[in-house]
Image 1 (cartoon, rainbow, N blue to C red):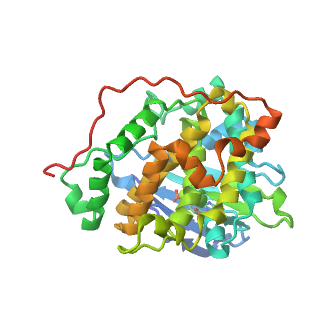
Image 2: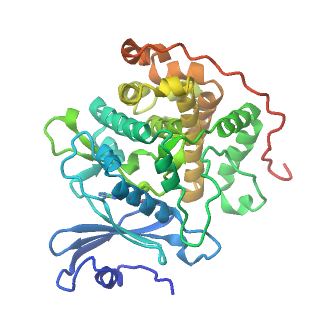
Image 3: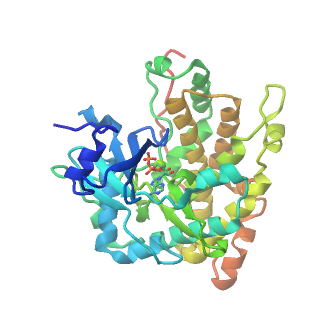
Amino acid sequence: MVLSLSSHNVMQYLQDAGLCNSEDGASDQSELPGSSKNNFNLVVTLADNRQLLIKQERNINNYDAAPHELFQEWLFHQLLQQFPVLGNILAMPTAVNYAPLVVHFDEENSILVRNYLSEYVELATFYHNNEIFPQEIACAIGTTLARLHRATYNRREYQDFMATAPQGEFRYGFYNPAQGVGSIEPEIFGSVPTDALKFYVLYQQYESLESAIADLAYDWNPCCLTHNDLKLNNILVDFRREKLDNCLVRLIDWEACSWGDPAYDLGTLLASYLGIWLKSLVVDPTIELEESLHLALTPLEILQPSMIALVRAYVNAFPMILEYRRDFILRVIQFAGLALIHQIQDTITCWKYFNNADICMLQVAKSLLTMPEQAILTIFGISESEILNSVSKIHKFRKPVKEQQLVPIYYEKTRLRGC
Ligand SMILES: Nc1ncnc2c1ncn2[C@@H]1O[C@H](COP(=O)(O)OP(=O)(O)O)[C@@H](O)[C@H]1O
Ligand SMILES: [Mg+2]
């Protein structure tokens, strides 16, 4: 019998799971508003002030769907237990006070319990409330991510571990997240607002966009442990230190983690920064796109130092990635474009919303995916060689050469039937 968790039975559940006793009693319970489309999330404060975050997958009663995302987070937690060296990397730069976050997993009921770090601030909220973008934070994220990718790069023991499947199931391969918009069925007319149909029509018109995504998916090369959902909502920052240059960041929400492509994580992060800019655009049918992009309430120039710091810190901590993948930065830019498309899709499916600002986002995504070389200069305000200047002074790299591409003979087209 699958249990559906609610604020009424959560305390009993925690007691039965041995996570608290009857004297603990909850002093407070609050549902995390709109944090995720898939999960029911509840924060419980116990009498001793301990806080727990309880997550349950919402599609729990849908037996056709495979509720395995929390299993991935649990698997990741197990990986850290088995290989503590990885746990230390994720608690960097200061390895003090590192305690495992996940404290309980109930596979049958798809429930995961984590320690809730009330002293940490979600990075998306911090940026939103303060409108400041200290480079030190981006630097700490880039360094942490690079260390994780570097430590797991081509390491068979970690790859085998991540291939573990839920009990009674098999895993035939790792999921490739480099996916564009899937095939469009007639049901779409009932499930998305009429305005949003424009997104699908435009997407289908851009053949170069579809081919760029197809190439990206084709070249997807899983080689290290990746988070696969690295947006600013999934990063916590500890601001208790006086100096930001030693700030502690925690990457959370490892539900999509897998064996994947490192450029995907860095690209998703960049897209999160670009999203701040693009969501602040002033859009009006009478204003040209170029003008809109310059009228943003949060101008791109304010975000550029953080984006440059992020990439530099990453490459500084994992310089060999430029040897392994000559086109690494270009792929990061392309994955950022793809992540923007995923952001638009999420807005449409979760919030039933699509407006002119999203059309601007689609145009920017298209530029990143189809013309990554030119896009670098626009996005960062400096060229690739200037970004990598400090790194290449230490490590001598050859200039990236574009690999010869096989011409794909066929792309599966998504078409609105009847259009
Ligand atoms: N350990 C934690 N400490 C503090 N805040 C957290 C913690 N875990 C999650 N949160 C907050 O809860 C939100 C939702 O958690 P998350 O694991 O990302 O769930 P979801 O899968 O629903 O996105 C996060 O965006 C963050 O703001
Ligand atoms: Mg999340």
